[in-house]
Image 1 (cartoon, rainbow, N blue to C red):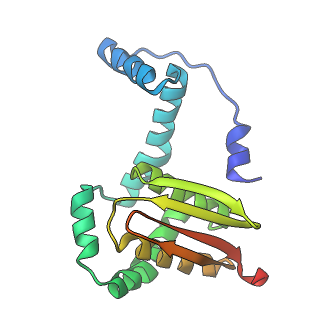
Image 2 (image 1 turned 90 degrees about the vertical axis):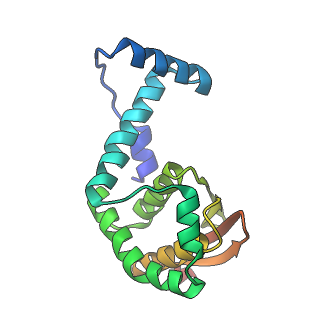
Image 3 (image 1 turned 180 degrees about the vertical axis):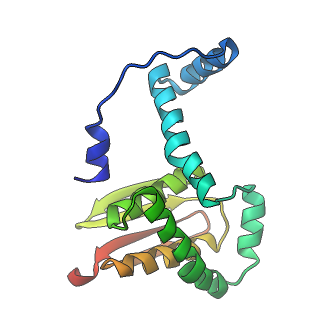
Length: 184
């Protein structure tokens, strides 16, 4: 069963909690702005806290301003950023996969990458094209970030029998397809 199937089949519980009136007002305001129910918003916030923020903090992830990240990333050569991605970046990502999911498979890799993008406010889209996963990213994280991601992902994917192909890149976005190595 895939992660998406597991998420659809979740059992729910009724829970009654008390929250500060000011916080309640802010939550209701957010619901109105986002045109979602309070239940949906609270579930999203709790899911994000428990399954992302707490785990990434425990693993030592750091946050920084986009402009700072972009400046640091683009001050390194394309070759150097690809080398970092293939070594430390891949090791860190694999450790995160093991820590969060307990295994490294295509569905966990794609789920963690999607969560990472969404939490960075990077536009992420995944679709099936000719039996392959196609990932499309829109971002403002600099010219070198796509090279880091593609190198990191390809290194991890190669270890489980997949590879990246048909990669395209421009200043605002990039895309790639993931195929089984044996199908090529």
